[in-house]
Length: 515
Image (cartoon, rainbow, N blue to C red):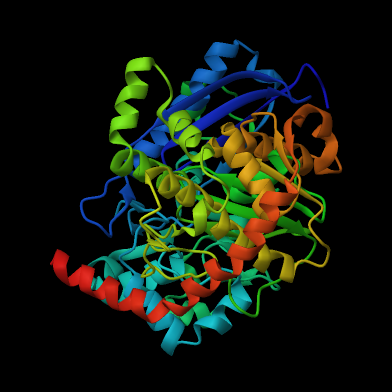
């Protein structure tokens, strides 16, 4: 690694694209962030404009090059991280027939049910590592092929957002093993498209991109774009991986036994293993990082989103007071929660406000307060909601540790929630584990750059930036709190399992009411 050489990590996210320019030795020199709209015309649709996203990629790279004033000759490579599960139908003229259908789009939910119930969904999951769920491109493509014949008939390729960006730069349709392993269409053992999944999706592999390693690099970027970004035409572009697996590298949760937990609007929990592995109970995903590093874990829909709902619906007057006093509304909520003993006096909250992915994989589950009595006040409800998010993540952690070969040795937590001392301590108590908060880093962008250095053979291990990532806090479990939670966790889990058929009836009723 050369201190006078630079690298750019680009993270194509659901709400914005971020570019961070680092020295090869890891220090941040310049960063830029450009947002775009999520189009949600109805309750099931969540789409974006692929061209808006491409322009955000161009602008983010252009801005970090301009701000830093580095010589383009000193830029070693640009490496990419990207959100998973997106689908764009492309026509014969290589133009989009659809917007970019994001992971949050639920229109293929009936097809997800069909694949689970009638098309050996569990067998497909065991081969491909992507749980059968409307987020999965397998379900989205099957839905379009069977229900949208006007689009399917004209479609030459089904691609994701990173493939769209790389096509614009290099005129070639390529998908890395990491993004492909989150499509529900790639055989994890063979690193090839899975025939039985293609059959269900009603497509041949010609309709998908060429599979490449996450370490694959490309040169010869379209001259007009290279000039616009202020880089050389022969700058190396490392295709990189998905944001989820790269954030594990970016927080140094890469050794066996290291577990990374992220809670932003949604949340996820992940660990790295040396070979692909799936779960006989179908609760967790398995996605590629490199051919020798695989990430297993589970995403949850309901993280900070729950806190936002609590803020808007249960604490309007407190929030108004906080605004007048210039206090962060979320600080107020966690302070209110802190006044209540752990366990919220036996009040449980199932945080399934938007259905749930791991560990239930059911878009019909619904949120609920259970155990309410006349003794419960608003602050108990706020505390129970915060605890419910962590209880739910803990159930994914239990599934994960069943599949891991080694016990969890460390838990590294990041995301907006990690700013709250109350929530951090709650996680340590519920997980009964030390919780380490890494210093705030652009973890997916740093992860992309570390993968780039690894691809370029400038490092032989992802652990080289151990010291750079550092630690800001470590929280240890409080024995008394831990015992309270140990009593409540089995009740939390059993209730959600027993209500499964009632959730479906409620969801059906709610859908009928909306029509």
